[in-house]
Image (cartoon, rainbow, N blue to C red; front, top):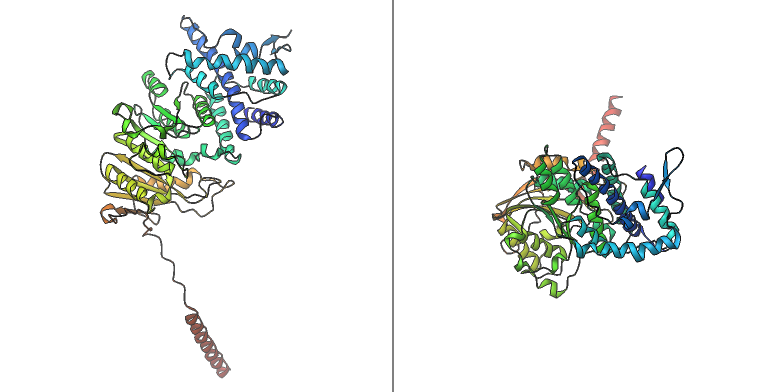
Length: 487
Protein backbone atom coordinates (compact mmCIF):
# COMPACT_ATOMS: atom_id res chain seq x y z
CA UNK A 1 0.00 0.00 0.00
CA UNK A 2 2.75 2.45 0.99
CA UNK A 3 4.63 1.99 -2.28
CA UNK A 4 1.57 2.71 -4.44
CA UNK A 5 0.73 5.74 -2.28
CA UNK A 6 4.19 7.20 -2.88
CA UNK A 7 3.81 6.65 -6.63
CA UNK A 8 0.43 8.40 -6.62
CA UNK A 9 1.87 11.34 -4.66
CA UNK A 10 4.72 11.71 -7.15
CA UNK A 11 2.20 11.73 -9.99
CA UNK A 12 0.29 14.56 -8.29
CA UNK A 13 3.43 16.61 -7.59
CA UNK A 14 4.67 16.07 -11.13
CA UNK A 15 1.75 18.10 -12.46
CA UNK A 16 2.13 20.88 -9.88
CA UNK A 17 3.85 24.05 -11.11
CA UNK A 18 5.87 24.39 -7.89
CA UNK A 19 7.59 21.00 -8.02
CA UNK A 20 10.12 20.40 -10.76
CA UNK A 21 12.21 17.37 -9.77
CA UNK A 22 12.54 14.25 -7.63
CA UNK A 23 14.20 16.41 -4.97
CA UNK A 24 11.09 18.60 -4.75
CA UNK A 25 8.90 15.50 -4.54
CA UNK A 26 10.92 14.14 -1.59
CA UNK A 27 11.01 17.51 0.17
CA UNK A 28 7.28 18.16 -0.14
CA UNK A 29 6.30 14.60 0.67
CA UNK A 30 8.58 14.82 3.74
CA UNK A 31 6.88 17.73 5.48
CA UNK A 32 3.37 16.34 5.01
CA UNK A 33 4.58 12.88 6.05
CA UNK A 34 6.26 14.39 9.11
CA UNK A 35 3.05 16.05 10.31
CA UNK A 36 1.12 12.79 9.84
CA UNK A 37 3.85 10.98 11.79
CA UNK A 38 3.52 13.55 14.59
CA UNK A 39 -0.23 12.93 14.75
CA UNK A 40 0.28 9.17 15.15
CA UNK A 41 3.08 9.78 17.69
CA UNK A 42 0.81 12.00 19.77
CA UNK A 43 -1.92 9.34 19.71
CA UNK A 44 0.58 6.70 20.93
CA UNK A 45 1.85 8.97 23.71
CA UNK A 46 -1.67 9.87 24.80
CA UNK A 47 -2.68 6.19 24.92
CA UNK A 48 0.45 5.34 26.96
CA UNK A 49 -0.30 8.19 29.37
CA UNK A 50 -3.89 7.04 29.85
CA UNK A 51 -2.75 3.47 30.56
CA UNK A 52 -0.43 4.87 33.23
CA UNK A 53 -3.13 7.14 34.63
CA UNK A 54 -1.07 10.18 33.69
CA UNK A 55 -2.01 13.36 31.88
CA UNK A 56 -0.59 14.19 28.46
CA UNK A 57 0.03 17.66 27.02
CA UNK A 58 -0.19 17.73 23.24
CA UNK A 59 2.78 19.03 21.27
CA UNK A 60 0.58 20.63 18.58
CA UNK A 61 -2.22 23.05 19.50
CA UNK A 62 -5.76 21.91 18.65
CA UNK A 63 -6.21 24.32 15.72
CA UNK A 64 -3.13 22.90 14.00
CA UNK A 65 -3.71 19.21 14.77
CA UNK A 66 -3.70 16.96 11.71
CA UNK A 67 -7.28 15.92 12.45
CA UNK A 68 -8.42 19.56 12.35
CA UNK A 69 -6.91 21.02 9.17
CA UNK A 70 -5.69 18.01 7.15
CA UNK A 71 -8.13 15.22 7.80
CA UNK A 72 -11.22 16.12 9.81
CA UNK A 73 -13.35 12.96 9.93
CA UNK A 74 -17.06 12.20 9.78
CA UNK A 75 -18.76 8.92 10.65
CA UNK A 76 -21.37 7.53 8.27
CA UNK A 77 -24.42 5.46 9.17
CA UNK A 78 -22.34 2.27 9.16
CA UNK A 79 -19.88 3.71 11.67
CA UNK A 80 -17.09 4.07 9.10
CA UNK A 81 -15.08 7.28 9.03
CA UNK A 82 -14.15 9.37 6.02
CA UNK A 83 -12.65 12.82 5.49
CA UNK A 84 -15.18 15.60 5.94
CA UNK A 85 -16.15 17.02 2.53
CA UNK A 86 -16.00 20.47 4.10
CA UNK A 87 -12.28 20.07 4.83
CA UNK A 88 -10.08 22.89 3.55
CA UNK A 89 -9.06 22.64 -0.09
CA UNK A 90 -7.98 24.80 -3.01
CA UNK A 91 -6.90 28.36 -2.16
CA UNK A 92 -8.30 28.06 1.38
CA UNK A 93 -6.01 25.12 2.15
CA UNK A 94 -2.96 26.73 0.52
CA UNK A 95 -3.55 29.99 2.43
CA UNK A 96 -3.95 28.16 5.74
CA UNK A 97 -0.72 26.20 5.23
CA UNK A 98 1.33 29.19 4.04
CA UNK A 99 0.06 31.93 6.33
CA UNK A 100 -0.94 30.06 9.51
CA UNK A 101 0.44 26.51 9.78
CA UNK A 102 4.05 27.13 8.71
CA UNK A 103 4.46 30.36 10.78
CA UNK A 104 3.05 28.52 13.83
CA UNK A 105 5.43 25.56 13.42
CA UNK A 106 8.46 27.81 12.89
CA UNK A 107 7.97 29.32 16.37
CA UNK A 108 8.64 25.94 17.99
CA UNK A 109 12.39 26.51 17.62
CA UNK A 110 12.26 29.64 19.80
CA UNK A 111 9.96 28.14 22.40
CA UNK A 112 11.62 24.72 22.82
CA UNK A 113 13.36 23.92 26.12
CA UNK A 114 16.44 22.45 24.41
CA UNK A 115 17.85 21.61 20.98
CA UNK A 116 17.44 17.86 21.49
CA UNK A 117 13.66 17.99 21.93
CA UNK A 118 11.18 17.07 19.22
CA UNK A 119 9.69 20.56 19.60
CA UNK A 120 13.01 22.10 18.58
CA UNK A 121 13.28 19.75 15.58
CA UNK A 122 9.78 20.76 14.45
CA UNK A 123 10.79 24.42 14.55
CA UNK A 124 14.08 23.81 12.76
CA UNK A 125 12.50 21.76 9.99
CA UNK A 126 9.81 24.32 9.23
CA UNK A 127 12.27 27.21 9.36
CA UNK A 128 14.13 25.50 6.51
CA UNK A 129 11.08 24.57 4.44
CA UNK A 130 8.44 26.24 2.44
CA UNK A 131 5.36 24.76 0.86
CA UNK A 132 6.16 24.42 -2.85
CA UNK A 133 2.83 22.80 -3.77
CA UNK A 134 1.17 25.75 -5.48
CA UNK A 135 -2.23 24.21 -6.11
CA UNK A 136 -4.33 23.76 -2.99
CA UNK A 137 -6.26 21.07 -4.85
CA UNK A 138 -3.04 19.09 -5.45
CA UNK A 139 -2.13 19.59 -1.80
CA UNK A 140 -5.53 18.25 -0.75
CA UNK A 141 -4.95 15.10 -2.83
CA UNK A 142 -1.50 14.60 -1.28
CA UNK A 143 -2.86 15.10 2.24
CA UNK A 144 -5.70 12.62 1.63
CA UNK A 145 -3.24 9.97 0.42
CA UNK A 146 -0.84 10.44 3.33
CA UNK A 147 -3.73 10.32 5.78
CA UNK A 148 -4.23 6.69 4.75
CA UNK A 149 -0.73 5.79 5.97
CA UNK A 150 -0.12 4.49 9.49
CA UNK A 151 3.01 4.62 11.67
CA UNK A 152 1.63 2.75 14.66
CA UNK A 153 3.26 -0.71 14.43
CA UNK A 154 6.90 -1.74 14.02
CA UNK A 155 6.14 -3.37 10.65
CA UNK A 156 4.45 -0.20 9.36
CA UNK A 157 7.39 1.96 10.42
CA UNK A 158 9.87 -0.50 8.91
CA UNK A 159 8.08 -0.57 5.54
CA UNK A 160 7.78 3.21 5.51
CA UNK A 161 11.47 3.72 6.32
CA UNK A 162 12.46 1.26 3.57
CA UNK A 163 10.38 3.12 0.98
CA UNK A 164 11.69 6.49 2.14
CA UNK A 165 15.24 5.19 1.66
CA UNK A 166 14.24 4.26 -1.89
CA UNK A 167 13.07 7.80 -2.57
CA UNK A 168 16.38 9.19 -1.25
CA UNK A 169 18.25 6.82 -3.55
CA UNK A 170 16.24 8.01 -6.55
CA UNK A 171 17.36 11.57 -5.90
CA UNK A 172 20.77 10.61 -7.24
CA UNK A 173 19.27 10.83 -10.72
CA UNK A 174 17.48 14.11 -10.10
CA UNK A 175 20.28 16.65 -10.50
CA UNK A 176 21.05 19.41 -8.02
CA UNK A 177 23.63 17.13 -6.39
CA UNK A 178 20.97 14.79 -5.05
CA UNK A 179 23.43 11.90 -5.25
CA UNK A 180 25.50 13.43 -2.46
CA UNK A 181 22.85 12.39 0.00
CA UNK A 182 23.01 8.68 -0.71
CA UNK A 183 25.79 6.21 0.08
CA UNK A 184 25.03 2.60 -1.00
CA UNK A 185 23.49 0.87 2.00
CA UNK A 186 25.47 -2.40 1.55
CA UNK A 187 28.66 -0.35 1.89
CA UNK A 188 27.40 1.49 4.99
CA UNK A 189 26.33 -1.78 6.63
CA UNK A 190 29.78 -3.23 5.95
CA UNK A 191 31.54 -0.20 7.44
CA UNK A 192 29.34 -0.37 10.55
CA UNK A 193 30.08 -4.10 10.98
CA UNK A 194 33.83 -3.54 10.80
CA UNK A 195 33.79 -0.56 13.19
CA UNK A 196 31.47 -2.56 15.47
CA UNK A 197 29.93 0.13 17.72
CA UNK A 198 28.63 -0.73 21.20
CA UNK A 199 25.72 0.67 23.20
CA UNK A 200 27.12 3.57 25.19
CA UNK A 201 29.36 4.78 22.36
CA UNK A 202 28.67 8.19 20.89
CA UNK A 203 28.48 8.04 17.08
CA UNK A 204 29.03 11.09 14.87
CA UNK A 205 28.74 12.07 11.22
CA UNK A 206 29.75 15.64 10.42
CA UNK A 207 28.51 15.36 6.82
CA UNK A 208 25.31 13.58 7.71
CA UNK A 209 23.36 13.95 4.44
CA UNK A 210 20.37 11.61 4.58
CA UNK A 211 21.72 10.11 7.85
CA UNK A 212 22.39 6.72 6.29
CA UNK A 213 25.37 5.99 8.56
CA UNK A 214 23.48 6.93 11.73
CA UNK A 215 20.40 4.96 10.65
CA UNK A 216 22.40 1.80 9.92
CA UNK A 217 24.37 2.16 13.17
CA UNK A 218 21.04 2.47 15.02
CA UNK A 219 19.70 -0.68 13.33
CA UNK A 220 22.97 -2.53 14.10
CA UNK A 221 22.86 -1.59 17.79
CA UNK A 222 19.14 -2.24 18.07
CA UNK A 223 19.68 -5.80 16.80
CA UNK A 224 22.82 -6.40 18.87
CA UNK A 225 21.10 -7.52 22.08
CA UNK A 226 17.93 -7.34 24.13
CA UNK A 227 17.74 -3.81 25.46
CA UNK A 228 16.95 -2.57 28.92
CA UNK A 229 14.92 0.61 29.37
CA UNK A 230 18.20 2.42 30.01
CA UNK A 231 19.70 1.05 26.76
CA UNK A 232 16.68 2.28 24.78
CA UNK A 233 16.91 5.72 26.36
CA UNK A 234 20.64 5.84 25.57
CA UNK A 235 20.00 4.94 21.91
CA UNK A 236 17.24 7.53 21.61
CA UNK A 237 18.99 10.48 23.23
CA UNK A 238 22.72 9.98 23.81
CA UNK A 239 24.18 8.00 20.91
CA UNK A 240 23.73 9.58 17.47
CA UNK A 241 24.98 13.03 16.49
CA UNK A 242 25.32 14.78 13.15
CA UNK A 243 25.76 18.07 11.33
CA UNK A 244 24.54 18.99 7.86
CA UNK A 245 25.08 22.17 5.87
CA UNK A 246 22.40 21.84 3.19
CA UNK A 247 18.78 22.49 4.10
CA UNK A 248 17.16 19.72 2.08
CA UNK A 249 19.66 17.08 3.22
CA UNK A 250 19.18 18.22 6.81
CA UNK A 251 15.41 17.78 6.58
CA UNK A 252 15.70 14.41 4.86
CA UNK A 253 18.25 13.22 7.42
CA UNK A 254 15.99 14.08 10.35
CA UNK A 255 12.97 12.53 8.64
CA UNK A 256 14.91 9.37 7.81
CA UNK A 257 16.00 8.90 11.42
CA UNK A 258 12.51 9.56 12.74
CA UNK A 259 11.02 6.98 10.38
CA UNK A 260 13.62 4.46 11.58
CA UNK A 261 12.61 5.06 15.19
CA UNK A 262 14.77 7.88 16.60
CA UNK A 263 12.19 10.41 17.78
CA UNK A 264 14.34 13.53 18.19
CA UNK A 265 17.59 13.12 16.21
CA UNK A 266 20.60 15.09 17.45
CA UNK A 267 21.27 16.53 13.99
CA UNK A 268 22.26 20.18 13.74
CA UNK A 269 21.85 22.38 10.68
CA UNK A 270 25.40 23.71 10.57
CA UNK A 271 28.48 23.97 8.36
CA UNK A 272 30.99 21.63 10.00
CA UNK A 273 33.92 23.18 8.16
CA UNK A 274 33.14 26.65 9.52
CA UNK A 275 34.25 25.44 12.96
CA UNK A 276 37.86 26.08 13.98
CA UNK A 277 39.68 22.85 14.79
CA UNK A 278 41.46 24.60 17.65
CA UNK A 279 38.14 25.15 19.42
CA UNK A 280 37.31 21.44 19.74
CA UNK A 281 37.56 20.35 23.38
CA UNK A 282 37.36 16.94 25.04
CA UNK A 283 33.62 17.39 25.77
CA UNK A 284 33.03 17.81 22.02
CA UNK A 285 34.60 14.50 21.05
CA UNK A 286 32.97 11.20 20.06
CA UNK A 287 33.78 7.49 20.33
CA UNK A 288 33.00 6.71 16.70
CA UNK A 289 32.96 8.62 13.41
CA UNK A 290 31.17 7.18 10.37
CA UNK A 291 31.01 9.37 7.28
CA UNK A 292 31.20 9.85 3.55
CA UNK A 293 32.14 13.54 3.31
CA UNK A 294 31.53 15.41 0.03
CA UNK A 295 34.64 15.58 -2.13
CA UNK A 296 35.84 17.68 -5.02
CA UNK A 297 34.66 21.01 -3.61
CA UNK A 298 36.85 24.06 -3.50
CA UNK A 299 36.60 25.60 -0.06
CA UNK A 300 37.21 29.31 0.39
CA UNK A 301 40.41 30.65 1.98
CA UNK A 302 38.58 31.74 5.15
CA UNK A 303 37.27 28.20 5.66
CA UNK A 304 40.74 26.75 5.14
CA UNK A 305 42.02 28.99 7.93
CA UNK A 306 40.15 26.77 10.40
CA UNK A 307 42.55 23.91 9.66
CA UNK A 308 46.28 23.38 10.25
CA UNK A 309 46.67 21.71 6.84
CA UNK A 310 45.37 24.18 4.24
CA UNK A 311 43.63 22.63 1.22
CA UNK A 312 40.69 23.44 -1.01
CA UNK A 313 39.64 19.77 -1.15
CA UNK A 314 36.51 19.47 1.00
CA UNK A 315 37.02 15.82 1.91
CA UNK A 316 40.55 16.47 3.19
CA UNK A 317 39.28 19.22 5.48
CA UNK A 318 36.61 16.86 6.78
CA UNK A 319 39.23 14.17 7.42
CA UNK A 320 41.20 16.61 9.59
CA UNK A 321 37.99 17.42 11.47
CA UNK A 322 37.19 13.74 12.00
CA UNK A 323 40.66 12.94 13.37
CA UNK A 324 40.46 15.88 15.75
CA UNK A 325 36.92 15.16 16.99
CA UNK A 326 37.59 11.49 17.84
CA UNK A 327 38.24 10.59 21.47
CA UNK A 328 41.49 8.79 22.28
CA UNK A 329 40.84 5.15 21.37
CA UNK A 330 37.96 6.21 19.14
CA UNK A 331 37.25 4.38 15.88
CA UNK A 332 36.36 5.63 12.41
CA UNK A 333 35.19 4.39 9.02
CA UNK A 334 35.52 7.14 6.39
CA UNK A 335 34.83 7.03 2.64
CA UNK A 336 37.25 9.17 0.63
CA UNK A 337 38.68 9.45 -2.91
CA UNK A 338 41.39 6.91 -3.66
CA UNK A 339 43.70 9.73 -4.80
CA UNK A 340 44.19 10.43 -1.08
CA UNK A 341 46.64 7.52 -1.10
CA UNK A 342 48.98 9.00 -3.68
CA UNK A 343 48.46 12.75 -4.29
CA UNK A 344 51.83 14.51 -4.38
CA UNK A 345 50.76 18.00 -3.27
CA UNK A 346 52.02 19.21 0.11
CA UNK A 347 48.58 19.14 1.77
CA UNK A 348 47.95 15.50 0.82
CA UNK A 349 51.39 14.41 2.00
CA UNK A 350 50.97 16.28 5.29
CA UNK A 351 47.52 14.76 5.84
CA UNK A 352 48.74 11.21 5.21
CA UNK A 353 51.61 11.81 7.64
CA UNK A 354 49.18 13.20 10.25
CA UNK A 355 46.81 10.23 9.89
CA UNK A 356 49.59 7.64 10.12
CA UNK A 357 51.30 9.30 13.09
CA UNK A 358 48.22 10.08 15.21
CA UNK A 359 46.04 7.08 14.34
CA UNK A 360 46.34 3.39 13.59
CA UNK A 361 45.17 3.11 9.99
CA UNK A 362 44.59 -0.62 10.30
CA UNK A 363 42.46 -1.24 7.18
CA UNK A 364 41.97 0.25 3.71
CA UNK A 365 39.13 -1.03 1.52
CA UNK A 366 39.71 -0.24 -2.17
CA UNK A 367 36.37 -0.03 -4.00
CA UNK A 368 35.78 -0.53 -7.74
CA UNK A 369 34.54 2.19 -10.07
CA UNK A 370 30.75 2.43 -10.22
CA UNK A 371 30.28 1.83 -6.48
CA UNK A 372 28.59 5.22 -6.36
CA UNK A 373 26.00 5.29 -9.14
CA UNK A 374 26.51 8.28 -11.41
CA UNK A 375 29.91 9.17 -9.94
CA UNK A 376 33.01 8.22 -11.89
CA UNK A 377 35.31 8.81 -8.92
CA UNK A 378 37.04 5.76 -7.43
CA UNK A 379 36.85 5.60 -3.66
CA UNK A 380 38.40 3.87 -0.68
CA UNK A 381 37.32 3.40 2.93
CA UNK A 382 39.78 4.28 5.71
CA UNK A 383 39.35 2.40 8.99
CA UNK A 384 41.41 3.79 11.84
CA UNK A 385 41.68 4.13 15.61
CA UNK A 386 42.97 7.28 17.27
CA UNK A 387 45.84 7.28 19.73
CA UNK A 388 48.60 5.05 18.38
CA UNK A 389 50.73 5.45 15.26
CA UNK A 390 50.26 3.05 12.35
CA UNK A 391 52.80 0.25 12.00
CA UNK A 392 50.99 -2.04 9.56
CA UNK A 393 48.00 -1.48 7.27
CA UNK A 394 45.90 -4.26 5.79
CA UNK A 395 44.60 -3.58 2.27
CA UNK A 396 41.68 -5.25 0.54
CA UNK A 397 40.99 -4.68 -3.14
CA UNK A 398 37.38 -5.43 -4.08
CA UNK A 399 37.59 -7.15 -7.47
CA UNK A 400 34.23 -8.11 -8.97
CA UNK A 401 33.42 -10.16 -12.06
CA UNK A 402 30.95 -7.51 -13.27
CA UNK A 403 30.73 -3.78 -13.82
CA UNK A 404 28.76 -1.87 -11.20
CA UNK A 405 26.03 0.55 -12.22
CA UNK A 406 22.46 1.66 -11.66
CA UNK A 407 20.97 -1.67 -12.76
CA UNK A 408 23.75 -3.74 -11.18
CA UNK A 409 24.64 -2.08 -7.88
CA UNK A 410 26.95 -3.16 -5.08
CA UNK A 411 25.39 -5.74 -2.75
CA UNK A 412 26.28 -7.16 0.66
CA UNK A 413 27.46 -10.46 -0.78
CA UNK A 414 30.10 -8.57 -2.78
CA UNK A 415 31.64 -7.47 0.52
CA UNK A 416 31.29 -10.73 2.45
CA UNK A 417 34.87 -11.87 1.79
CA UNK A 418 36.23 -8.50 2.91
CA UNK A 419 34.37 -8.72 6.24
CA UNK A 420 35.57 -12.28 6.82
CA UNK A 421 39.24 -11.70 5.95
CA UNK A 422 39.40 -8.38 7.78
CA UNK A 423 38.82 -10.09 11.13
CA UNK A 424 42.28 -11.70 10.95
CA UNK A 425 43.95 -9.50 8.30
CA UNK A 426 44.42 -12.62 6.20
CA UNK A 427 46.34 -12.50 2.93
CA UNK A 428 44.66 -13.56 -0.31
CA UNK A 429 44.63 -12.71 -4.00
CA UNK A 430 42.70 -9.57 -3.02
CA UNK A 431 44.40 -8.65 0.26
CA UNK A 432 47.86 -7.90 1.64
CA UNK A 433 49.60 -6.14 4.52
CA UNK A 434 51.85 -3.10 4.19
CA UNK A 435 54.69 -2.39 6.61
CA UNK A 436 54.51 1.39 7.15
CA UNK A 437 58.22 1.53 8.06
CA UNK A 438 58.98 0.65 4.42
CA UNK A 439 57.05 3.64 3.06
CA UNK A 440 58.86 6.52 1.39
CA UNK A 441 59.21 8.84 4.40
CA UNK A 442 59.05 11.93 2.22
CA UNK A 443 55.82 11.22 0.35
CA UNK A 444 54.10 8.61 2.57
CA UNK A 445 52.62 7.26 -0.66
CA UNK A 446 50.16 4.50 0.23
CA UNK A 447 49.16 3.50 -3.31
CA UNK A 448 50.82 0.11 -3.15
CA UNK A 449 50.14 -2.36 -5.96
CA UNK A 450 48.59 -5.62 -4.84
CA UNK A 451 51.56 -8.03 -4.59
CA UNK A 452 49.27 -11.08 -4.52
CA UNK A 453 47.53 -10.54 -7.86
CA UNK A 454 48.22 -13.52 -10.16
CA UNK A 455 50.68 -12.38 -12.78
CA UNK A 456 49.46 -12.41 -16.35
CA UNK A 457 51.60 -14.05 -19.00
CA UNK A 458 53.73 -11.38 -20.72
CA UNK A 459 52.83 -10.44 -24.30
CA UNK A 460 55.13 -11.99 -26.93
CA UNK A 461 56.94 -9.93 -29.52
CA UNK A 462 55.86 -10.20 -33.19
CA UNK A 463 59.24 -11.71 -34.19
CA UNK A 464 58.81 -14.50 -31.65
CA UNK A 465 55.28 -15.25 -32.88
CA UNK A 466 56.43 -15.45 -36.54
CA UNK A 467 59.35 -17.65 -35.58
CA UNK A 468 57.04 -20.09 -33.78
CA UNK A 469 54.63 -20.09 -36.74
CA UNK A 470 57.50 -20.98 -39.12
CA UNK A 471 58.62 -23.75 -36.76
CA UNK A 472 55.10 -25.20 -36.64
CA UNK A 473 54.89 -25.08 -40.46
CA UNK A 474 58.14 -27.06 -40.76
CA UNK A 475 56.90 -29.61 -38.20
CA UNK A 476 53.63 -30.00 -40.14
CA UNK A 477 55.47 -30.55 -43.44
CA UNK A 478 57.69 -33.19 -41.83
CA UNK A 479 54.67 -34.97 -40.36
CA UNK A 480 52.84 -35.02 -43.73
CA UNK A 481 55.98 -36.37 -45.45
CA UNK A 482 56.23 -39.21 -42.87
CA UNK A 483 52.55 -40.11 -43.38
CA UNK A 484 53.02 -40.30 -47.21
CA UNK A 485 56.02 -42.56 -46.85
CA UNK A 486 54.07 -44.92 -44.60
CA UNK A 487 51.25 -45.06 -47.13
